[in-house]
Image (cartoon, rainbow, N blue to C red):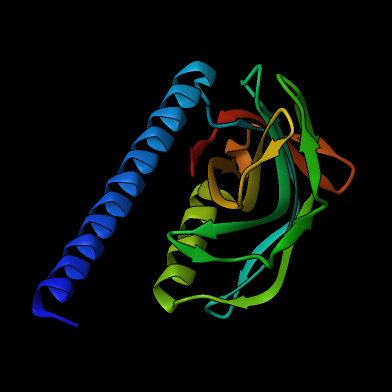
Length: 208
């Protein structure tokens, strides 16, 4: 084979590679435009969560950094989208105090939330002698003795979005709900048997 023939084959190979790269670039560009158009038309919104109430059956700190608690909470979730459904594949609920977890994880059964639908859950979250940092145990004891404690109710979830027959991959969703509890003479709760119920109606922060 002559040098001229080798050069001809190399030029042809380069042209094929350039055409392939150009075609791939155009395909990706079209796909990106389609995704942006669908996103703009659907205008997806994050679900909205509200912590409606909390019923405290037990809450105390023991020597000096162990927390025991039993709390039933009521949380509602609303899907604000009129064209997108939400699969909640996993939901874990727990309480934290000053960025430290003070209850065990409580799982909520997987569910599907249709367009504009509202789901309401009332799980128990609890922990027996859960160890916390000594300074958090002291602060929690002092705040409870002073008449008020600020907790955060958290939900860690895995969700999928459904548009028509298409279902997306899994996304992590995080929910934070402030829960302000009062004790003693300052309590704003209502005594229900051996528990105290607090009407909170507190909107939660949601991130995906």
